[in-house]
Length: 253
Image 1 (cartoon, rainbow, N blue to C red):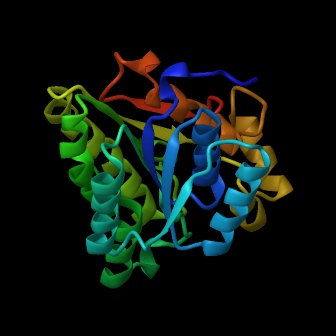
Image 2: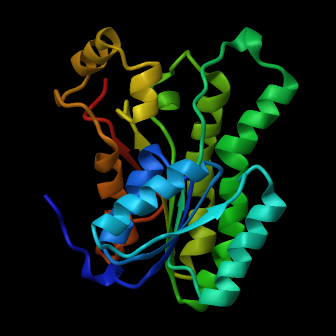
Protein backbone atom coordinates (compact mmCIF):
# COMPACT_ATOMS: atom_id res chain seq x y z
CA UNK A 1 0.00 0.00 0.00
CA UNK A 2 1.37 3.39 -1.00
CA UNK A 3 1.16 6.23 1.51
CA UNK A 4 1.57 9.73 0.10
CA UNK A 5 3.51 12.27 2.15
CA UNK A 6 2.49 15.55 0.55
CA UNK A 7 5.09 17.59 2.44
CA UNK A 8 7.96 15.63 0.85
CA UNK A 9 7.24 16.82 -2.70
CA UNK A 10 10.12 18.92 -4.09
CA UNK A 11 12.27 18.51 -1.00
CA UNK A 12 15.95 17.74 -1.55
CA UNK A 13 17.58 14.56 -0.22
CA UNK A 14 21.03 12.97 -0.15
CA UNK A 15 21.41 9.18 0.09
CA UNK A 16 24.72 7.34 0.45
CA UNK A 17 25.00 3.83 -0.99
CA UNK A 18 21.89 4.27 -3.11
CA UNK A 19 22.62 2.04 -6.10
CA UNK A 20 21.55 -1.30 -4.66
CA UNK A 21 19.82 -3.08 -1.80
CA UNK A 22 18.12 -1.01 0.88
CA UNK A 23 19.69 2.17 -0.48
CA UNK A 24 18.18 1.69 -3.94
CA UNK A 25 14.78 1.08 -2.39
CA UNK A 26 15.13 4.29 -0.36
CA UNK A 27 16.02 6.28 -3.49
CA UNK A 28 13.07 4.78 -5.36
CA UNK A 29 10.58 5.49 -2.58
CA UNK A 30 11.78 9.09 -2.15
CA UNK A 31 11.50 9.70 -5.90
CA UNK A 32 7.99 8.24 -5.82
CA UNK A 33 7.10 10.99 -3.32
CA UNK A 34 8.46 13.70 -5.64
CA UNK A 35 11.70 14.26 -3.73
CA UNK A 36 14.77 15.64 -5.55
CA UNK A 37 17.29 12.88 -4.79
CA UNK A 38 21.07 12.79 -5.10
CA UNK A 39 22.65 9.43 -4.35
CA UNK A 40 26.28 8.41 -3.95
CA UNK A 41 27.80 5.05 -4.81
CA UNK A 42 30.66 3.29 -6.61
CA UNK A 43 28.31 0.92 -8.45
CA UNK A 44 27.77 2.65 -11.81
CA UNK A 45 25.88 -0.26 -13.38
CA UNK A 46 23.59 -0.53 -10.39
CA UNK A 47 22.95 3.21 -10.47
CA UNK A 48 22.15 3.18 -14.20
CA UNK A 49 19.78 0.26 -13.74
CA UNK A 50 17.99 2.02 -10.89
CA UNK A 51 17.61 5.28 -12.82
CA UNK A 52 16.25 3.38 -15.83
CA UNK A 53 13.71 1.63 -13.60
CA UNK A 54 12.56 4.94 -12.09
CA UNK A 55 12.29 6.57 -15.53
CA UNK A 56 9.95 3.81 -16.68
CA UNK A 57 7.70 4.57 -13.71
CA UNK A 58 7.68 8.24 -14.77
CA UNK A 59 8.77 9.35 -11.32
CA UNK A 60 11.13 12.18 -10.41
CA UNK A 61 14.57 11.16 -11.72
CA UNK A 62 17.40 10.98 -9.16
CA UNK A 63 20.93 12.21 -9.80
CA UNK A 64 23.80 9.75 -9.42
CA UNK A 65 27.10 10.92 -7.97
CA UNK A 66 29.99 8.48 -8.38
CA UNK A 67 31.92 8.50 -5.13
CA UNK A 68 33.79 6.18 -2.80
CA UNK A 69 32.46 7.50 0.51
CA UNK A 70 35.68 6.39 2.23
CA UNK A 71 37.27 9.38 0.47
CA UNK A 72 35.89 11.95 2.91
CA UNK A 73 37.41 14.97 1.14
CA UNK A 74 35.80 14.08 -2.19
CA UNK A 75 32.51 13.12 -0.55
CA UNK A 76 32.27 16.43 1.32
CA UNK A 77 33.17 18.37 -1.85
CA UNK A 78 30.38 16.68 -3.83
CA UNK A 79 27.85 17.49 -1.12
CA UNK A 80 29.04 21.10 -0.92
CA UNK A 81 28.77 21.45 -4.72
CA UNK A 82 25.15 20.23 -4.64
CA UNK A 83 24.33 22.78 -1.93
CA UNK A 84 26.02 25.60 -3.89
CA UNK A 85 24.33 24.73 -7.19
CA UNK A 86 20.92 23.48 -6.06
CA UNK A 87 20.26 24.91 -2.61
CA UNK A 88 19.67 23.66 0.90
CA UNK A 89 19.38 20.01 1.91
CA UNK A 90 16.17 18.87 3.62
CA UNK A 91 16.93 15.17 4.15
CA UNK A 92 20.14 13.22 4.68
CA UNK A 93 20.04 9.42 4.64
CA UNK A 94 23.32 7.85 5.78
CA UNK A 95 23.01 4.34 4.42
CA UNK A 96 26.25 3.13 2.78
CA UNK A 97 27.80 0.18 4.60
CA UNK A 98 29.18 -3.33 4.12
CA UNK A 99 28.45 -6.31 6.36
CA UNK A 100 31.29 -8.53 5.23
CA UNK A 101 31.56 -11.53 7.55
CA UNK A 102 34.70 -11.91 9.69
CA UNK A 103 35.89 -13.42 12.95
CA UNK A 104 37.71 -11.76 15.83
CA UNK A 105 40.89 -13.61 14.90
CA UNK A 106 40.82 -12.30 11.32
CA UNK A 107 40.68 -8.62 12.29
CA UNK A 108 43.86 -6.57 11.72
CA UNK A 109 44.38 -2.87 12.44
CA UNK A 110 44.07 -2.11 8.73
CA UNK A 111 40.87 -4.13 8.38
CA UNK A 112 39.36 -2.52 11.49
CA UNK A 113 40.05 1.00 10.18
CA UNK A 114 38.65 0.07 6.78
CA UNK A 115 35.44 -1.27 8.36
CA UNK A 116 35.01 1.93 10.38
CA UNK A 117 35.59 3.99 7.24
CA UNK A 118 32.87 2.26 5.25
CA UNK A 119 30.37 1.70 8.07
CA UNK A 120 30.69 4.77 10.31
CA UNK A 121 33.14 7.57 9.50
CA UNK A 122 31.30 9.04 6.52
CA UNK A 123 28.09 9.37 8.57
CA UNK A 124 29.61 12.01 10.82
CA UNK A 125 31.22 14.01 8.03
CA UNK A 126 28.08 14.03 5.90
CA UNK A 127 26.14 15.36 8.90
CA UNK A 128 28.84 17.95 9.52
CA UNK A 129 28.66 19.08 5.88
CA UNK A 130 24.87 19.51 5.68
CA UNK A 131 24.41 21.11 9.11
CA UNK A 132 24.79 24.75 7.97
CA UNK A 133 22.49 24.09 5.04
CA UNK A 134 19.80 22.67 7.30
CA UNK A 135 20.17 25.55 9.76
CA UNK A 136 19.67 27.96 6.85
CA UNK A 137 16.63 25.92 5.89
CA UNK A 138 15.32 26.20 9.48
CA UNK A 139 15.27 22.45 9.91
CA UNK A 140 15.83 19.06 8.38
CA UNK A 141 15.80 15.32 8.96
CA UNK A 142 18.87 13.11 9.28
CA UNK A 143 18.31 9.35 9.12
CA UNK A 144 21.13 6.96 10.00
CA UNK A 145 20.87 3.34 8.92
CA UNK A 146 22.12 0.99 11.62
CA UNK A 147 21.45 -2.68 12.31
CA UNK A 148 20.05 -5.04 14.93
CA UNK A 149 23.34 -6.98 14.80
CA UNK A 150 24.84 -5.25 17.84
CA UNK A 151 21.54 -5.36 19.76
CA UNK A 152 21.31 -9.13 19.27
CA UNK A 153 25.03 -9.71 19.84
CA UNK A 154 25.63 -11.24 16.41
CA UNK A 155 28.93 -13.14 16.28
CA UNK A 156 29.52 -13.01 12.53
CA UNK A 157 31.09 -9.54 12.23
CA UNK A 158 32.42 -7.79 15.37
CA UNK A 159 33.84 -4.76 13.52
CA UNK A 160 30.60 -4.21 11.60
CA UNK A 161 28.46 -4.57 14.73
CA UNK A 162 30.69 -2.15 16.63
CA UNK A 163 30.26 0.47 13.90
CA UNK A 164 26.50 -0.03 13.89
CA UNK A 165 26.33 0.37 17.66
CA UNK A 166 28.35 3.58 17.33
CA UNK A 167 25.81 4.91 14.82
CA UNK A 168 23.15 4.80 17.53
CA UNK A 169 25.55 6.56 19.90
CA UNK A 170 26.27 9.20 17.26
CA UNK A 171 22.55 9.72 16.73
CA UNK A 172 21.87 10.27 20.42
CA UNK A 173 24.93 12.44 21.01
CA UNK A 174 24.11 14.87 18.18
CA UNK A 175 20.37 15.17 18.84
CA UNK A 176 20.57 18.06 21.33
CA UNK A 177 23.07 20.08 19.29
CA UNK A 178 21.01 19.68 16.11
CA UNK A 179 17.65 19.92 17.83
CA UNK A 180 18.10 23.58 18.76
CA UNK A 181 18.05 24.26 15.00
CA UNK A 182 14.94 22.11 14.40
CA UNK A 183 17.06 19.37 12.83
CA UNK A 184 15.85 15.91 13.72
CA UNK A 185 18.20 12.92 13.81
CA UNK A 186 17.10 9.30 14.16
CA UNK A 187 18.46 5.87 13.37
CA UNK A 188 16.85 2.78 11.90
CA UNK A 189 17.94 -0.74 12.85
CA UNK A 190 16.87 -3.20 10.14
CA UNK A 191 16.68 -6.91 10.89
CA UNK A 192 17.37 -9.67 8.38
CA UNK A 193 16.47 -7.92 5.12
CA UNK A 194 16.13 -9.99 1.94
CA UNK A 195 18.18 -7.88 -0.46
CA UNK A 196 19.59 -9.52 -3.58
CA UNK A 197 23.05 -9.52 -2.01
CA UNK A 198 21.89 -11.09 1.25
CA UNK A 199 19.84 -13.70 -0.58
CA UNK A 200 22.78 -14.61 -2.78
CA UNK A 201 25.38 -14.86 -0.01
CA UNK A 202 23.66 -15.91 3.20
CA UNK A 203 19.88 -16.22 3.11
CA UNK A 204 19.67 -19.89 2.21
CA UNK A 205 16.46 -21.84 3.04
CA UNK A 206 17.86 -23.09 6.36
CA UNK A 207 18.90 -19.63 7.56
CA UNK A 208 15.62 -18.12 6.38
CA UNK A 209 13.70 -20.65 8.46
CA UNK A 210 15.85 -19.93 11.51
CA UNK A 211 15.19 -16.20 11.18
CA UNK A 212 11.44 -16.63 10.64
CA UNK A 213 11.25 -18.91 13.67
CA UNK A 214 12.84 -16.13 15.76
CA UNK A 215 10.56 -13.38 14.43
CA UNK A 216 7.22 -12.47 16.00
CA UNK A 217 5.86 -11.67 12.53
CA UNK A 218 6.27 -14.59 10.16
CA UNK A 219 7.17 -12.54 7.11
CA UNK A 220 10.41 -11.87 5.28
CA UNK A 221 11.59 -8.31 5.84
CA UNK A 222 12.16 -6.58 2.49
CA UNK A 223 14.03 -3.37 1.59
CA UNK A 224 10.71 -1.59 1.12
CA UNK A 225 9.85 -2.19 4.80
CA UNK A 226 12.89 -0.11 5.75
CA UNK A 227 12.20 2.50 3.06
CA UNK A 228 8.72 3.11 4.45
CA UNK A 229 10.24 3.96 7.82
CA UNK A 230 12.66 6.33 6.06
CA UNK A 231 9.72 8.14 4.44
CA UNK A 232 8.00 8.51 7.80
CA UNK A 233 11.11 9.96 9.43
CA UNK A 234 11.84 12.23 6.45
CA UNK A 235 8.32 13.65 6.57
CA UNK A 236 7.05 16.30 8.99
CA UNK A 237 4.56 13.66 10.13
CA UNK A 238 7.37 12.58 12.48
CA UNK A 239 8.14 16.17 13.59
CA UNK A 240 8.14 15.14 17.25
CA UNK A 241 10.66 12.33 16.78
CA UNK A 242 14.40 12.72 17.35
CA UNK A 243 17.21 10.86 19.19
CA UNK A 244 15.37 7.59 18.60
CA UNK A 245 16.25 4.19 17.17
CA UNK A 246 13.46 2.60 15.14
CA UNK A 247 13.74 -1.16 14.75
CA UNK A 248 12.38 -2.80 11.59
CA UNK A 249 12.90 -6.52 12.18
CA UNK A 250 9.46 -8.16 12.45
CA UNK A 251 10.02 -8.61 16.18
CA UNK A 252 13.27 -10.59 15.88
CA UNK A 253 14.03 -12.13 19.28
